[in-house]
Length: 266
Image 1 (spheres, rainbow, N blue to C red):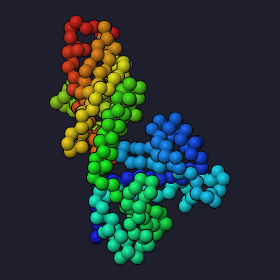
Image 2 (cartoon, rainbow, N blue to C red; image 1 turned 90 degrees about the vertical axis):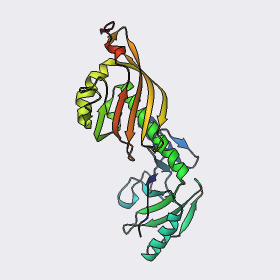
Image 3 (cartoon, helix red, strand yellow; image 1 turned 180 degrees about the vertical axis):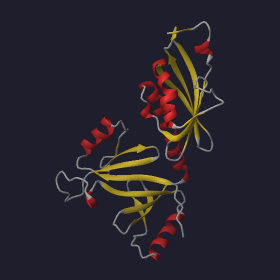
């Protein structure tokens, strides 16, 4: 019997000092930290990373080594609560200890907890389909925002591209009919001439398709490589896989705004 899972819902970590962890993950790495009092959390795509204080008895300034490293547990997301009943039956049939279906008092969700032969703790964690949809939408918006943030900061590394990503853009080599293929091609061919040309970037809105596979983002992009500077109104479409990586990108705008004979290259 195989349990159907959809994604990793959350990863929980023990830290020595919540304030220090908040400073690191929030201020240094730039994640949006949420404070629930006794714990902190932030999201990576659709996955929650939860930060807890150390358990009583933890040695001062403890560091992650073998079974004591900051790793606490990993949870599989299941959208159908009936999968938890199947999980309990499967685990007990295999003589794997479990307390059955339990209730998470913090998030008010049901889960089944067990440990593997190496004592790593796992959970099958139930989140209804509506919540799963909301997480996917949040992931798509986060990916699009990362792209425009990277464009504004001129930092290609910030864009979550899949290694086999394809790009179609009016001013890219080959235009819209012959896409660039591969992250390396985007970084070496498309990105270098783009960086000095782009000024201020303003995201206006996001539009997500019904299948939750893609997002189209409307934005204003200032082009400073022409005189006088021009502002492109763009509608860029990103197809995003479940891991939060862009696998297809299509840039849509009127190139006449920067190729019109009345404009001069800066």
